[in-house]
Each structure stands twice: as structure tokens, then as C-alpha cells.
Length: 225
Length: 94
Image 1 (cartoon, each protein chain N blue to C red):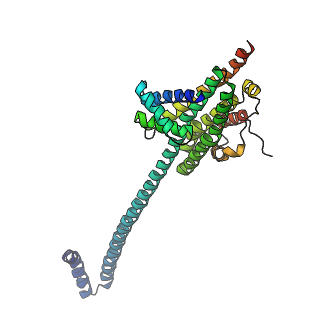
Image 2: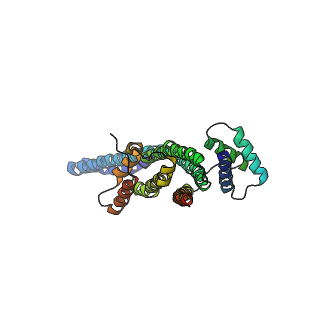
Image 3: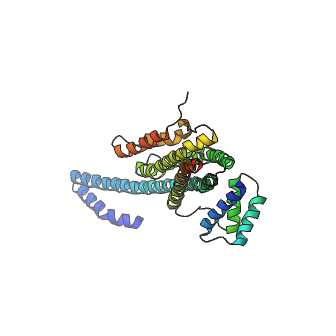
């Protein structure tokens, strides 16, 4: 390296010495300034390249860490989703029992199964769905391109199922023959889900908002005193 | 007996998970496992189905499809329950 540099500089130095010998100081000064500038420029480019390489390495490291965190969060989201799916499968058993009791005209079994269904819906299915949405909110972290489909594919169908559940358990015939009260849902029990949806729907998404609020209206939440 | 009906429902879910009909031997095994387990009826049902069928409830498969399918099933069942309740009144008044 040293030899190469010497070879490069040598002709310039001989030129400078020639200019000095002939008292041409201006030309000598210009050549010296050019050489110094050239070295400063090269040094700057070299340090910039090294710095860039270092920054790139840091970015790659951060990106890798971020991907690892995303994978961990994704696994958590999948786990919550699995729990929620399992509940939807298991709660079907309870609904089937209610249907059987209705068909066989077994009032005692219907009362028992209806109570069990209500308990499962409120304490298991709703709770699992709320947990699923909470992790989804962290995972999507404001990425509205993914949040909106999540609202359409997950939140709205869940609200529709809740509405159908309330219609079925509050069927007038069931209430009359079992002599029991209507069941209603308190809004706060679904607050994380509703907040998530409402905070992420924009004013211009009129159709989506209309669909969402229509479902909410049909659920008829119990008023909190 | 509600317990018997419950077991029948379990068998239906088990055949759904297995993707084929449940044999009599498997039915007996599920009932035996169900009675031997502890926990809520749903925990017992889940554990006994998984044990006998030898499959786990969905974990690493197309979640959206399964969720949609199971939510649809649930909605269908709720609708059937509501219809059955409406017809119940008619049967009673006959």
C-alpha cells in the first residue's frame, strides 16, 4: 500500500520540486493543495463507507431482533386464536344439548343446559375472544391494512354470533316455560374489542361503520347504572 | 339423561375431528375416558376426544378457515336452537 501511494505521489512531488526550483511557488502551492484535498477526500469517502457498513450491520441486527419479536408475538396470537377456536367448537356441544332438550321437551334439562351455555358463552368464549383481540391489537400495532380485515373477519362475525346467541337463549318460548329472565350483555365486558374496532375505523369507512354499529345495536347491551 | 346426550354430542365432534365415523370400540373408549377424567364437562370432552382420536384440536393449520367453519357451525346451531324453541311452543299447544 505504502509503495503504491509513493508511486502515485512521486510524479507530483517531482513536479512540485521542479516548480520550487524554478521559483514558481504558485503552481507548487496549487499542486500541494490538490494533493492534500485529494487525500482528505479519499479519507472522507473511506470513513463514510466504513460508517455506512457499520450502520447497515446495526440495522440488520435490529431488523433481526424485530423479526424475532414479531415471531414470538405471532405465536402468542396463534395460541390465543387456537383457544378461541377450541371454545367455538366446544360451545357447539352445549348448544346441541339445548336443541336436544327442546326436541325431547325436557324442561329440566333445557334449564340446566341453557344455564351452562350462558355461562360458557360469557365466561369462556367471550373472554377468549377478548384475549385474542388484545394480542391482535399489539401484534398489528396500528397497521390498518391488517387491522381492518381483522375487524371484518373476526370482530363482526363474533358480534353476529353474540347477537344470535342472545336471540336463541332469550327466545320468548324458552323464557316463558322456564320462567327465567332475559339474559343481556354488559358493554364493558366487550370493551377491549369495541375500543379496538372503534379506534381503528376511519370516518370514510362508512359502510364498515354502518355494519358494525348495526350489529352493536342489535345486541342491545344492558345499560350500566 | 343429559349425560348420555352430552356424550352423543361428543361423539359427533369426535367424528368431525377424526374426519370419519367413530367405531363402537372408539365410542366406548371415549365414554370411558370421559368418565375417568376430571374437570368441567368441556375439558373432559376435549381431553377424551383428543386421547381416543389421537389428534389435537386445530393448532397449526389454516386457522381462518377452521374458525370460519366453526363460527358458521355455531351460528347454524344457534339458529336451529331458536327455530326449535319456536316450534316447541307449537308442539306444546297441540
